[in-house]
Image (cartoon, rainbow, N blue to C red):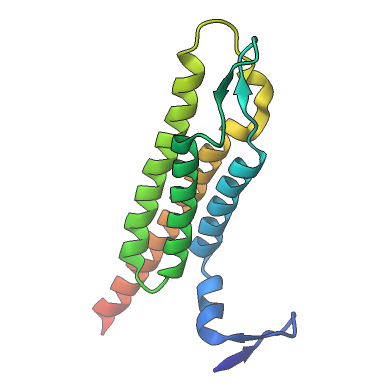
Length: 154
């Protein structure tokens, strides 16, 4: 069944339109975009002598970023299963905390002066992603509570 959108003059399948209208989907998309931006715009952090401390090509950093983006996409596509979305978002939050921990550990365990303060928002993007995932989980919980309250009325 096709639904006519009033302002955009576009036909969208009704099942996809309902998925994209949910606020948690928007939050999860923003989380995936933040991590995608982290991969593309995150520079290599170097110390004062020019030795690379953290680089996006490292297997650990690349694996954590890729796993988090893939998990966000899988979570978006499982929009009919709210409980599974909730659990996958929590797993994604844990992955982002591990990624943030890798950044902090690598920058704090080096001796001497590092140029971490000059790198800007790159290290903060996992925190932004975590915030969006928490907001998505709150919206999923609100949807689940609404469905349970409607089931009680039947």
